[in-house]
Length: 205
Image (tube, rainbow, N blue to C red):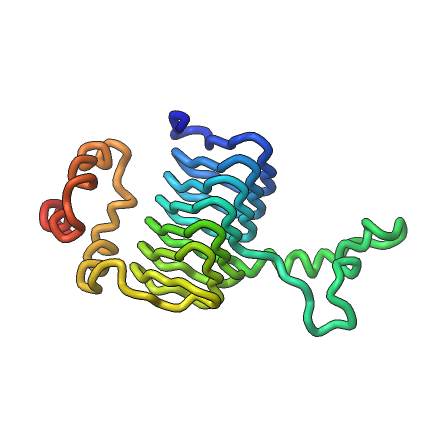
């Protein structure tokens, strides 16, 4: 793994980045596409992810082949095909449908802090994944996921809480993801060795 930078995101080869911003210590895996999105501090995606129109919090763990904010097609028109809105690719005298693209980009997906999106999962537009939540591999998420909840399946449904609700409320209140880089380093051994409850007891959550 490369040494990550607070100043510049680590973008691996063959990525396509459009109109996106990246926080400190971020990493984008080989062959990924990120468009019209913001990626928070310490968040990363593995290889061949497709992320569009998303707001990703801090410390998000996004596995390979994940798709967030998958684009859609108009279901109420005479055709589904993108000749209707990518029209300039088909006719010299036609313009692309900018209103369609603006409407699509407004349908944001939100990924909370300290989340884990498993391999080949899909998060649909306008879905919010709460802080601390886990999306199982291969899941298709069509509805909001509550904080610290594990979901799986097609469509994704809750499996269990990641931690008890009282603990998740305290973790959210502690908001360790807003700590400085130095504070995180000072607490590194506690993150490694302590249970969530013991960590909260030690760090005042």
